[in-house]
Length: 321
Image (cartoon, rainbow, N blue to C red):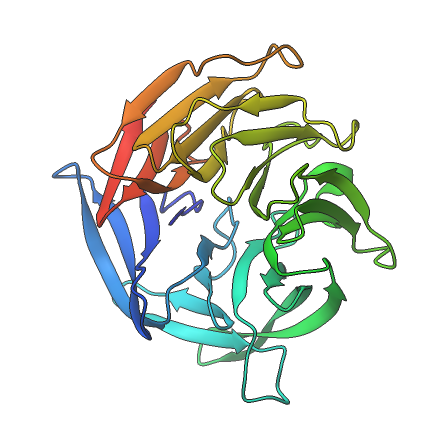
């Protein structure tokens, strides 16, 4: 699930189905201003479930209206008024009939021609998109591998670009080896380990603070807590958020505040935390919402900071903060 950031499409989300078979779907959902209801505007087929989907980070509306999805490959789709069509399929393993599934990806906010993918084959790949020649008033989009690196000792589960240092070159990844690693595209020969899970549990997700690039959040597989890290103090969490009573599935930092974060879990709860008093312990969340099912995804809308979207079962709910 992901919120669109285009100024002319603020109330729009993309949703991916999760069915354990080949045939899956992506739905584009938008707010009908007249009825004040969210309606499905477009549905298209997707091979295998999407591990992540993301709209192009185009806050000015100057690029083509693109949506990327990861699964067996990274796909970039062009969204039209009535239909969505596949613009390009990015495959880094042309010499084999087998592909290593992609666990996640991120789209660079500063340079929307850069995307990074993470894979179970221990690598991260940085892709460059090109808007090719104009064909009948439509710019064709294609992509190439800029660089591929072995990022971890085991599977890589997530990748995210940092806003530090200009926001283009720094990214971090987490994986099955239980570590958070930091990379710089300008110096890929070495990485910095900024955290290792004490029990070496796999780390599933990482999420950068949207306002203060020193902070990031991560969570372990089947873990009931979210760990907040400060890159200036490697290896030692500055906070642990542990009010959930079942495993955490999603993390979303507030788009407009450096000290608020939302976590969602199998205990049906979405919790908003105020972390201003770090490094003092954060005892309790400031807001809680209980859904009717296990929440598997949470997204905080950057264009509408008082809206948070959650998914559970086959439901999408929009919460007003």
